[in-house]
Image (cartoon, rainbow, N blue to C red; front, side, top):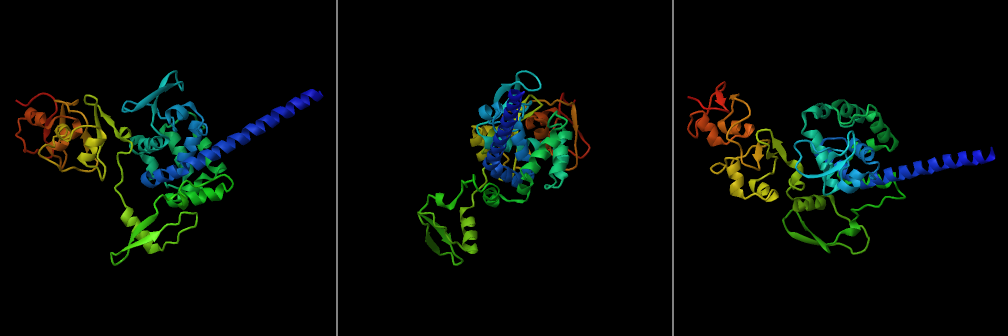
Length: 361
C-alpha cells in the first residue's frame, strides 16, 4: 500500500512538472510572436489575442512538426489556390497536404490573408476587434476547425495568459507590455542599445541638418517629440507588398492561370521583379501594352489569359468596360473583341450580352 502511495505521488508530481513546462513554452511562444501578431492586427484587423491563441493551439506552443519543419503555425492546408511550398502530414486523413513557409512571419501573414480574402470569414470582420469571444465562436462556425470545442479552447488560452491585453496595443508598445507580463524572462529584441549607427540625422523646422551623436553604451537617448516626428518622416519607406510573394498568388478557374489582386502601392515594375516576369510579358498577359492605368483590387495575371471563358456569356453591369470583363473572366481582350464582332476601343452598354464562348454571327 505504501509503494502504491509513493507511485501515485510520483504520477501527480510528474503531471505537475509537465504542466509547468507547458506553461513555460506557451509563455515563450507569446514572447516570441506577440509583436508579429499585433503588426498583423494593425494591417488586417484580426485580434492579436485570437492569432496568438491559434498559434499556441495549432502548434502545441511551437513544438509541432508543422511548425518545426514547415513554419506552419496555423495548420493551413494547401487548398487549390496554393502554389508555394508543401509538406505532407497525417491530420483528418493520412498524408494531407499542408502549406510550407520560409519563415514563421510568412505563416502569420498568410494566416491574415487566409481570413481576410475568403468570403466565409467575411462576417468576422464586422465584429468588434476586442470581442475575442465572438471571434473565437465565429471562426468555429465558419469552419476553421472541426473540433466542436475549438472556440472554448481559444478562449481558455486567451484568458489564461491575458492575451486580450494585446488587442488594445500598437506594435510600438508590445515590448513594454511583454516586459510587464514577463519581467523575469523577457528581453526586448528592439532595445536602443542595438542601434548600429553612430549618429542619426534629423531635419529641423528650418530644413537645416542637425547631427545627434548616439552613445555607444547603454545610456538612453533623449529625443523630443518634434525630433521623433522628423525622424519618422525621414525614415518613412514604401511598404514592401511583396515580402512574401507566394502568399499573394491565387488561381483563376479559367485554365488555372495564376493572378494576384492589386493592392495600394503595387506597381507593374514591383510585380515583374517579385515574380521574375519581364515587364513586357506582364503587360502582354494583362493587355496593358498600350494602357498603364491600374485599379486597386483588379486582377493582375502572371500567366497568359485564355482565348475563351468558362461561362457562355456575360451580362454587362453599369460602368463595366470590355477590359474589366476580360480581366474578370481571364480572357484575352483581343479575343473578347473578336468573339463579339467589336473593334478595339468599342465599349458595351449596361445590359448587353458579351459572349465568352462562341462567336456572334
